[in-house]
Length: 185
Ligand SMILES: Cc1ncc(COP(=O)(O)O)c(C=O)c1O
Image (tube, protein in one colour):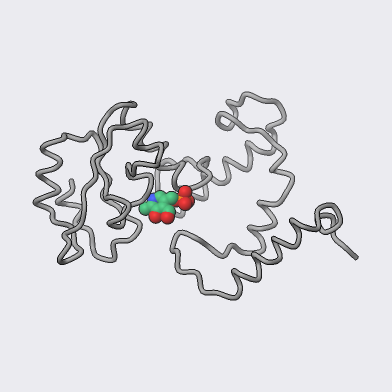
């Protein structure tokens, strides 16, 4: 028997099938991607997708939040426990949105941020030119040493002193070395 998607939209059904086969047939080495469990697939493909829930639990903009409030509160409690944190915000859909939320909490539009250039291992959201992070903020990009592929902390310090960024992003997407967070601080 055909399932609802197969019946209603056979082309999308087939393409999802192809993507599943692609994911199963190759080793994916993008660390921020994931193979979610069947339980997660079920939860994300559920009736929750029908519901607005702007605002925070017990402080919403739409009616009908009896259940979504419970779910968000549960997710917050679980995140706090797992990460041993006093607070957690579980609303960002992805890391990029979470980064934007962090900038928004720390600085104002037009302020300067400094991050590792995309071509050197940084992420789009670290101020790369095609990202909203370089449109909302002034972006200064540091690089790795072309010889060693490592951070040149003296150069990064000089750049920071020159531009005085309000935020220095010291993480990376592709920097397979230990980062000296003390020096960044
Ligand atoms: C360092 C870093 N920050 C942010 C992101 C963005 O995360 P997402 O793809 O979940 O938006 C990535 C993704 O690779 C990343 O490597």
